[in-house]
Length: 240
Image (cartoon, rainbow, N blue to C red; front, side, top):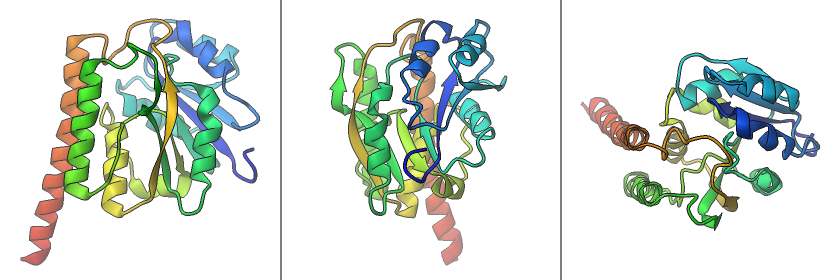
């Protein structure tokens, strides 16, 4: 629907009934051909609220951010562009045109909405999140020379590029997996400043608890180091 391209907005969600309806309502349907919610085993009315708001809903009981994204994508095999954003109301759907315009510029493969370069509401990003973003982006730059400021969930990718990445991480490593694989392949990734606010309802599964923050941070950093180790092992095997 965006010019000659079809666009699917993917929203992974777990127990976000209080926020997800407003998120979906704020997506400009002149830009999005599909809005798909990957219901990650919610025990509240997330699925019903999402359907009432006009979204397609698919359930994925295997817990994990990546699992919900992977399942949701199966509903939109004809989408040319995949857009991802969170269900808690932190991301601003009105920034969607910025991401699409940047993606359709010459040679762009992936667009990341940077909260750190944009307008983050005070308190929307914890000190732990900011530190984790800086550390992880620094490691990606050190290992692969790719410059990022954020691992933000609000992002857009061309479908053929998505297919080449063979995304597989079932959990919090989903966003960094995309960026690391893009860096390894020399893809053109562009960041655009986006708005970000505090979650509109409910509790964060990541920053809302110490355990959640630890799990997410461990998974993200673990993925970066594992990817670099596998890359070095592959090079050594090829040279032996």
